[in-house]
Amino acid sequence: MTTKNKIAQATKSLVVSDPFDHISVTSIMKTANLRRQSFYDYFHDKYDVLAWIYQTETDTAIKHCGNYRFWPQTLRRMLTYFVENHDFYRQLLPLDVQNAPETIIKTHLQTMIGSIFVSMGEAEHIAIDTDYCRFLQRTLGDSLYASVDQWLTDPDPQPMTTQYQFLRHYLEDGMNGLLMRSKQIKTYHRADDRNTEVG
Image (cartoon, rainbow, N blue to C red; front, side):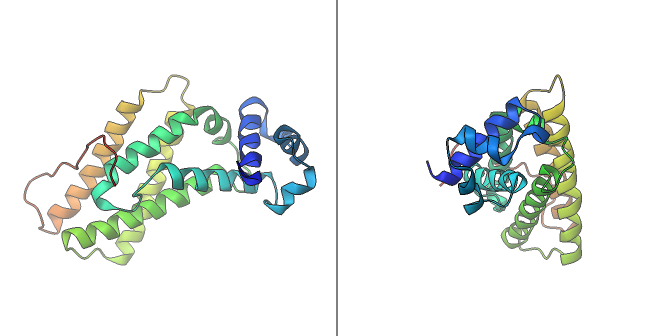
C-alpha cells in the first residue's frame, strides 16, 4: 500500500469513529503510523484527503462511468460503492466544510451524467443541445445526489436493490422521453440491466 493510500485509509477509519472536527493531521498520521510531515508531501490538509478518497475510489469502483451502453451497471456499481462505505459517508455527508463531500460528489455525478448523454447522442444518432445537456447535468446530478444523501443518512434506509430500481427507472424514463421527443423510438426501451461484469 502506498503512503498516500495509508493516509487515506487512516482518515477513513478516523472519520467512522471520531467527529470530523476532532480529526487532525497529527491524529491521521499517528493512525497511519507515519511521520506527520510526510502528510504534506501528498495533501494540503485533511479536506484534500476527502476529495482524493472519493475521486480515487469511485474511479476504481465505477467503470464505464460515461458510457451510455453501460449506465445501469454504472449506477449499480455506484450504489454498491456507497453501501460498502456507508459508515464513512454517513458521517461526512452532513458536513458543511471546505471540499465538502456534497460539492465533490455532485461535480462527479454531473460529469458522469453529461458524459452519458453525450455518449447517448452518439449511439442513438441524435443531437442534444449543449445548453440542454448542461441543464440535464445540473438537474439530474443534483437530484441523484439528493437521493443518495437521503438514502445513506436515513436511520432506516430502503434496500440497495430498491434504491437502484427507483433511480434506474427515474433515469430510464428521462432517456426514453428524450428519445421519443427526438423521434428515434416509438415505444419505451428498457436499458440493459445485466448484473454482470462488462469488459
